Length: 118
Image (cartoon, rainbow, N blue to C red):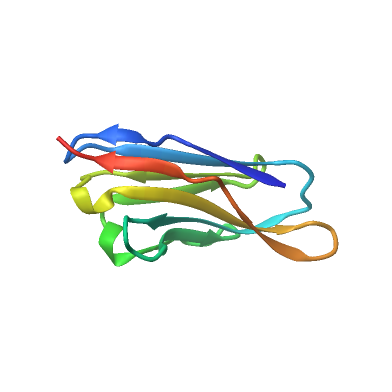
């Protein structure tokens, strides 16, 4: 199973970004879908996550300006983030917990760069 992320780029402060991630390959189920980010010189941190069809868990720094949605039939997850500021700059990674028929395994996307700058 591979994850393909898309939607990064250069954005103006105050703007919005939509990040999508799709799982390809054979999977028998996806439990957790999430987005993490890593700013230069900082550790990777959780941005938002959703388990099954539950309520998304949003990090405090994106609360009120982000939405996370998943399409379980297509194994895709979408993060919409608005009110961008310079602290949102970083590499955004999608993450999924995938059932491969025998085990739950962790999968990471390749990362997509989000740069917020005027």
